[in-house]
Length: 220
Image (tube, rainbow, N blue to C red; front, side):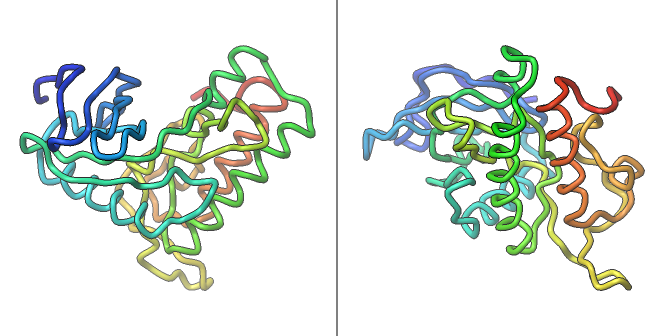
């Protein structure tokens, strides 16, 4: 694990870190200011430096560069700071769906369907680009302006490429790797088997259940 980077640091001589937003499996996210444009952005810095993390950040940057969709957080830049890879994305002002569910318990059917439709649009763009998100869950859906009708899908840190075509004609990822959040993972994903875009659809279904009932259909 590398040393934490202090708030106030100027990353890549451009992005000034304002405050820490959260910590994930591979990176720490900060709210930051772009000194060149005065735009507020989100900077994700790797928490450690090794071949796997470098490849993951590189793949995420490549994928986000290909994904231009209003329901997907836009890539604003990427690079390396003190040997640590980083990504810069647009700042979506608004709470996560996870926070809304924590406050409200559950959502009405019309609101839940609006959120689901927006996330489905984002996933359609992801799958059309030959990718799988692999970690669709409420904390990775932000509500722009606090509006449930404006969901934005974020955090592509564990995405997979649709590399292999199965005998049924559907595209799958390679087997043997386990990524995602257990409560929202499809059975084949939990087993570490090859996964297809259906795994994201399964996770979306789990999220719809969570929005309507207040909890996932299973807890582990």
